[in-house]
Length: 375
Ligand SMILES: Cc1ncc(COP(=O)(O)O)c(C=O)c1O
Image (tube, rainbow, N blue to C red; front, side, top):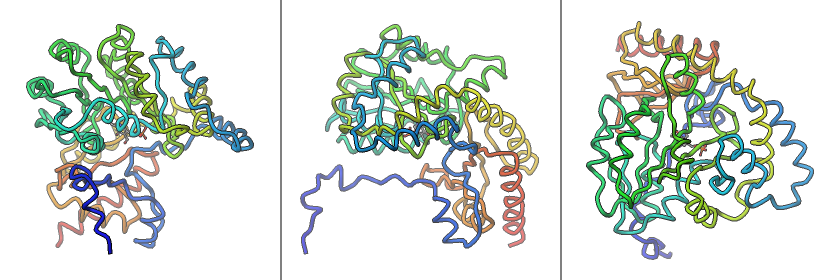
């Protein structure tokens, strides 16, 4: 028997893998009940019918390799965001771009800075690139920008900010971000991960406040890369398409690091069509903000601490073993995310679903928590 570990570098051997939300099939097999999935921040409304049609049409041509640069999509995104096409790089989801960014800019001896309890891919991408991740404590359940600025040293190359943050759903406002960027030294690039921007923008409008002017940084040529994805409000998580916006030269390095032909023609066609179907995205964000209010209120009435959300999920502190609650909920047909892997073993994250799904969740949740109280 070979011992392969001896050939694997230390930083890869010690890498923790990504633990995804449980799939419907796996959960149903385990619990032997029909389930709804409120575990991975997907939209409950599926992809746009226009995207489905576009994908079906392109399937007939899938003997051909895709456009490696996703030229048409890149142009469309540039036009939409008022930047140059050279400032856009399209990748197989923003997770893959995070890996590309880390591999391009980090190596042993260099580090990235982020907050504790943020997107779980930041540590993986950083460590896989041989870099070190510095995680600063949170302030008010969100990013502490002062602590972030203080943690930057001369070996820092990247700062990751998820805005809104996953899993806490908190927001960093545009003024605070402006002030933070003033403090960031020349040798550091700030990654603004805006996976949930459509939801946040809608909340901001409804709440009479501003979400972000991240694209101004890109237009002004600042050392900022904005990440966006089609996985959330556009409902295309399964086909893998996301993009980054930033300085053209940097984007060209990222494009070189991208796995050749990794954004399929199906994904490119779907994204192009999804961009055109604003009514579909709107339905998702409107439902989300209405249902977020409903869900937060109901959980608070039951006495749980729930954070106000800017995204399509809710962070809820249970004060008891979240993994056990998640297992019992799954047996009642609802998959949610216990947050032990984020260092919050007594908290859960619930993706906001349709009104019916949220009612199903609440009913199951009450039953599970009542049973737990009796024990
Ligand atoms: C903050 C954040 N960034 C990026 C992603 C990943 O998006 P994608 O599906 O494009 O890889 C997620 C997904 O959950 C996320 O929460």
